[in-house]
Amino acid sequence: MTQSGEMTSDPRIEATGEVMIRLRMGAHDGHYAGGLVDGAKMLQLFGDVATELLIRLDGDEGLFRAYEKVEFLAPVFVGDYVEAIGRILHIGKSSRKIEFVAQKVVTPLPPEKGGKAVSSADFLKTPVVVCRAVGTCVTPVELQRGITV
Image 1 (cartoon, helix red, strand yellow):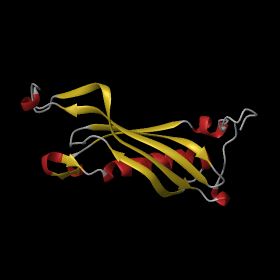
Image 2: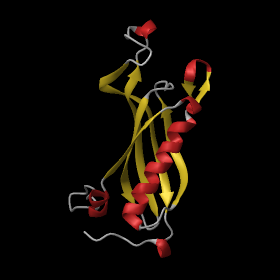
Image 3: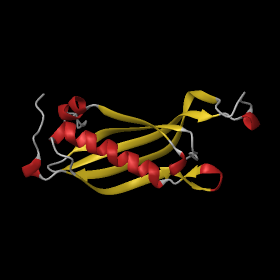
C-alpha cells in the first residue's frame, strides 16, 4: 500500500500479462438440444488459461483451488468461436487470484438465420460475454520459480 492507503500494483502481475485462448466449439462440445454447449466447457477453458498464467508466473502448473464467483451470461453453441481470457488480480504467498472472461467472437449464420449457406458465419464486431468468473489457484512455495522484474 502507498502512504495514502491505495493498493500498489504487484509488478509480477504486470510481467505475467494476460492469457487468451480462442477455440471453436465443435460437434463434440454440443451437449444439449440445438447444439447448446455445456457451461462446464467455459470452466475447462478457464482452467487452461489459469495453467498458462501460473506457468508464466511460477514455472509450475499449480492447482485450481476454488471459484468464488461464476456467472453464465449467454448461451454458447456448436460452431461458435470463444475466447477465454484471464489475468491475475492478486498474488499471495502461494495463492493467485485470477479473473476470467469468456466471450463469443464468431457465430454461425445458417440460411434460416440470414446466411447465404450452411457454412456462413458472422465475426461479431462487439464480442458477446458468455461467462465471467473469479477463482483462486495455488502453487506451493517450494515449486515456485518466480519471475524477476
